[in-house]
Image (cartoon, rainbow, N blue to C red; front, side):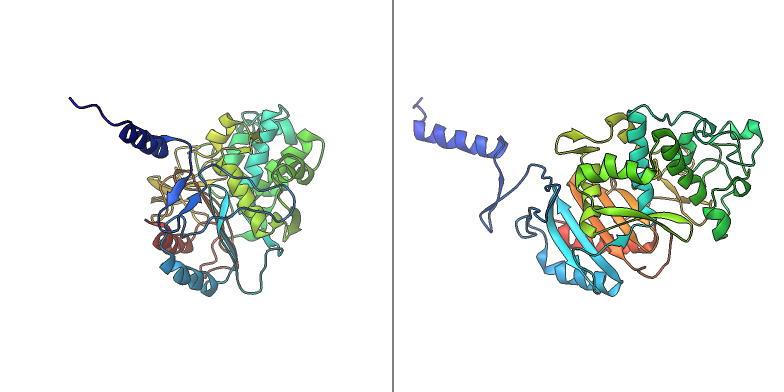
Length: 368
């Protein structure tokens, strides 16, 4: 047998190392390295690394159709991150990089996150009764029924409190007179704004500081979010620029860690971003989940066949707010997609038909 030339062995080893090592993947067309490691932007300033759609070998010819659709549907800001780097950053209809917009119910997912931090710190336990934090008179339920309700039920929309769907004032009210009985805790699912906001009251009571300050200290400052809580029509809503929404999405993409620092613990994070009860499989702890067999929307208690967003990746999780505020996180593709703006037309409190239509446009660009 003839010996194999050393030059051939060297070339073969080079191929193996190039294919399996830690080196950057190469876009043959552009001959530029594609960063594969996860990137986190600095906490201050406007520096943020980018990667182009061409480098990712996405279908750039479909970008114009996506941008036109976003503008036509009253969008203000739109960002796509890949491995933390900005691929697309677009502003429409008078919006810009510094302009703030209201998250509406997408802030529920932010609230769920700092509730988890409070549990990690030992100042709150989601398995404890609500009355442990709000006292015995927080609702008009009998003591027996009230004692069935835990913090976890507020996180999962399963308190059993009358949801008052379609009746705005009782729906957002947190006064005891507004909190009445429909079903035992854990036996029904209904989107209840008042029951959710009580979580913020619990954080204020258990931490000794306002939930706004707790959120700022424990989440916003640690990941560089620039935002603030305001009260609008009886609701506590969060407002920020579009990049801050993307920062929060990046935290979730990295399972609660920011550049190696744990913000929210893994155990709670896993519970938060997976099905939390059997009634609405598409709901975690104030997070919407794709790829499930059933879903219950915000304006009804009817259980519908899923998934939440058929056109989106099955493992997508989402923070969704009224008037089509969207923070989509796709772990399998290492993507964060953010859209803020006016309603695209359906005027839903969370999920809407816009989700599916938007993902059809996104897929036309990112599918390879």
